[in-house]
Length: 115
Image (cartoon, rainbow, N blue to C red; front, top):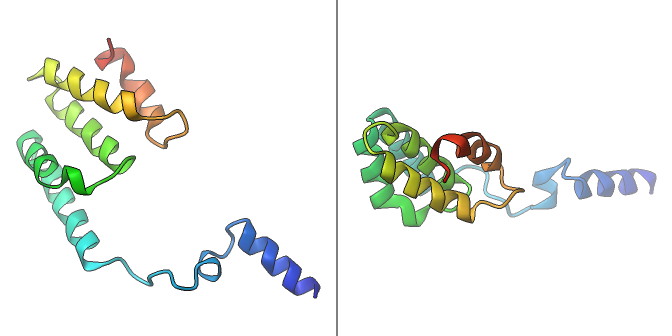
């Protein structure tokens, strides 16, 4: 009985994610892996490549991942197109809550790209 209670406590605290979600997928889906691979390639290709990726896949990605990718793009275009960088930064900032994992990065960049 004690073991069962301890196991329930561990699961409740997130200690055993597979036990908490028995139907959780064992591996990433092929579509997610392909998206991840294309993002890595776009990030290594520079600003134009990342912009093309955002145009193609931006609607398929949700925050906070989307916000993170957009902030990467802001940093890449900041010198060549500061107005566009500020516009995208303002959009990311507007939709990023203070409990988001991206929030510290938004606060860090606020001095450069904020109003």
